[in-house]
Figure 1: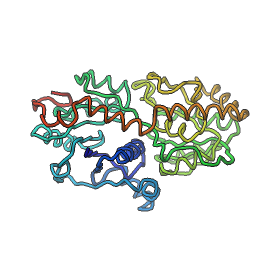
Figure 2: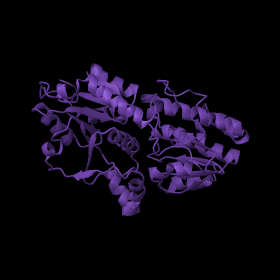
Figure 3: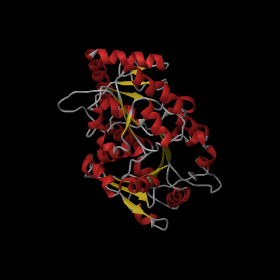
Figure 4: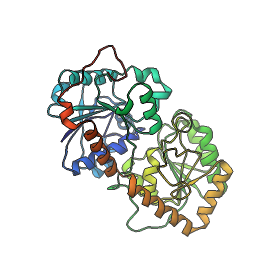
Amino acid sequence: MKIVYFTHSLASCWNHGNAHFLRGVLRELIALGHEVRAYEPGGAWSLANLLKDHGPEGLHAYRRAYPELGSETFREEADLAGMVDGADLVIVHEWNEPDLVARLGRLRARGGRFLLLFHDTHHRAVSDATAMRAYDLSAYDGVLAFGETLAEVYRGWGWGDRVFVWHEAADLRHFHPPAVDGERRGLVWIGNWGEGERTKELREFLFRPARETGLGLDVYGVRYHVTAKATVRRYGGRYHGWLPNAGAPEIFARHLATVHVPRRYYTRLLPGIPTIRVFEALACGIPLVSAPWDDAEGLFRTGTDYLTARDGAEMTRQLQSLQADAEFRASLVRNGLETIRARHSCAHRAAELLRIVDRLGGTEAAAEPRVVEPALMGSPA
């Protein structure tokens, strides 16, 4: 099967967490024998920021870790018909421009012999619904949503059984425990500061517990303004700047534990959707403690695969328990790895995608484009 994916950026993971997942799942599809083409728009903000901050060297870690992957940059005037020629499946990421989304839909409606799916991996369907409803998805065959609560939003928009939950997952070809476990010290947080939507939570569940336990804290990520960096220092943490995602396994391997502090959108408006860092941390064999988060879909075994804390005081106690008990840490590592390897690898997600294609009728269904009413915007015909 020929698969074409229109991503925001495959090359850059600068503030673009879904690139982690796409690299892994496209790699698995290639390993299964499928022909995969990835396209990304010229001037994509993630790649532009990476190059501005780190230059071309910032891409070296990705290229070393994923030699079989590559993406082609396209411009606004690109020949989309030529780009999808011969494709059986075309997937469009939600960070692409509405015009591109609509143009691909028109190609499908006018006889395109490919299944066309929209891939939503963000909270804008609830945080900025007007912007998302502006996308013309009327000729699309289905929607891939990265969590059940997001899928439910699309069902409310009329997608019914043509919206599919497609969670992120860990690329086990790259994210795994070290071959030989060395000395581990302190806490590590790999996450972006953002726009202040979890500043209070970071103080309560990360910075204060790190200081109170005396474990020490290393922080990696982007969008840390001067005040944010000062906050890290005030609590005794060390800020190291951006970390290429391909380098995360090595960093996890040096540390005793990590902490998950979900953004408010994923605790209040879209509960049950974990950040990809949860999958990756567990896959790398590092104990994880989470701030309040409702695993509404039962993706993991709470208290077995990872620990939770209802408030900052409990976070401190959980970290002290991990600090004092090596066997306790080892049990969390074993259990977390078991769940990831059984359910949450990119190989699992590649298989899920192929089942979705079969459910939609495969390429036979794509041979008969659906009748589209141009007035329908952001919802299926």
